[in-house]
Image 1 (cartoon, one colour):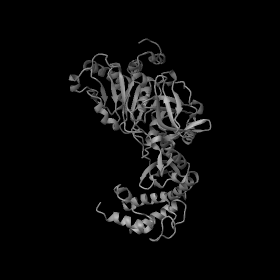
Image 2 (tube, rainbow over the protein chains, first blue to last red):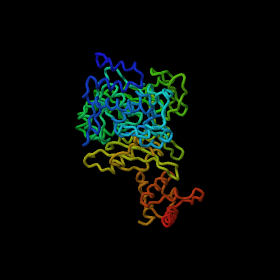
Image 3 (cartoon, one colour):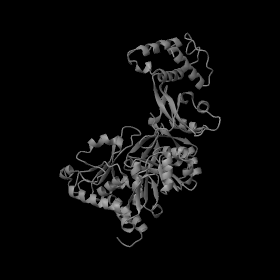
Image 4 (cartoon, one colour):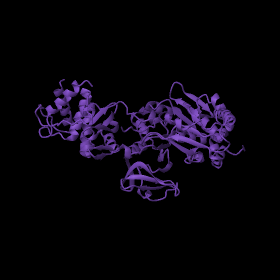
Length: 454
Length: 88
């Protein structure tokens, strides 16, 4: 390594083969600042752990040695700790060993990865692997396998190259040495993007002990988080239910939303609470990777983007029924995204996922629209709308609501419920008005941090 | 509560939720003509009854079984009484 400034060297990582970048970036920081914090795990909890860059790079080097000796067909990352996942990814990349990240709900898919070797937090190859089938030298391109989140069907495995995995990573100096919050599952596409980005740029990855909004807010303040990637659902929960004093102390300068559509209401709330934060909405899927990002702080995307080639090379179009179609490049096929969009003025806004649509007596209901109305009712902090099976009408619209704590003096939850139903009757077709409304302390979220719809 | 009382309570909730007045409910009353219930209201009534009585006779019935006519409150009472007394 030369004496060149750290910043320049990190930016130069882009010239290195993609599969080498993670290990190289970590080693680079470890050489210059061995004790710099790479990961704060269980932040805000009793078992907070700090892992520095020197420790990470030492573990990577050790695992590289084992992989070089055993040359396994592939590695299935079974580790629970984020730092272990980082070590596995970096060492596998460097050694050109394919690696798979399977989230909890995708573990059954491991059968598709024949002869691949599981690797847990011990970061030691099992004895059977050392004696097991070996991969011929360089016959397989280095690859990364990630399971889809199962938002629109059972999880499935998707093959990526290191180039596509790192395509969205930003290496410019403005991204160096920042504090990143990881609320996503570290084994899913969205989570991988966050920790790869943080550790490629000498950053500090802060992993809260749970998704409890009070704890997340405290971890952000205590660990000096400045960049918050989250689903709109997780951000909304932080804003509506997180400890007010802690949320007010958070010093965010970037919020990156993804995984679900962000509505105008949430974007406004976020702007008010975090006036210095740049709010970006990333449109990405596990299969396609990042397709586009919207940075103007408004819901949806500009209408003129439909039918035009975007800066990243993707082309957007729309099916007759409103489904957004994406063609990543001229050589690839156009694929349906399952996301429905609708023109509102100069924007296309997301109305929901096709699979989320509730069909009541043959008529469609977009749950997201009903949720937006419910969230606007005084006294309601958050809401989830889903379809309930019915023998009479096929489905029925049901809602769970979280009321503000405390409610204004003299207001009862029943009054909030009646007011909510009255507003829904006024603004929605009769079949779209929720027929079952339950009060809950907190809303369920999927493992990917989204709203469950069934 | 008897099945009739549970059914009357469910119908009152449906009427209240949809901004209508909850009238007195008697067994011989016609669900549509006298109480003004449409299919959505009936679907909601059934969901509410599943919660209070623990059965949904419309969902658990075999698909091939003919669906009994539901015209009056008392039709509902018979269907729920039968479902509550069935060994399943």
